[in-house]
Picture (cartoon, rainbow, N blue to C red):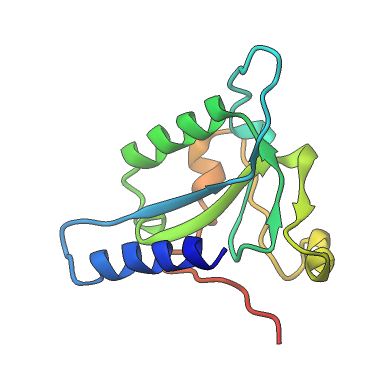
Length: 131
């Protein structure tokens, strides 16, 4: 995980001084391949930020979200990172994060369209660090 974090910080630093470019880091859960690897779409997905919850998602849905992110003009999806997984496959990243499954301290985003799903993403959001 240290290298993952260093890579994300490198991306963030590289774009920090740019007024014309931005980044979005998608942290997909484990790549779960349904039998036909179909796109289940936004209504099946959940987004969180803070790297405390994860889950499983298909490659097809990760690709679909990446395209939708690239096409989005919403300012809140620029210069940020988030986790992506299916709502019915959510797990804590680590045992100490089980408390976040209740969804009170972490915004668990859902939507029937990509616009709705992306609406609550926070720009410039970093990890949640428990003391």
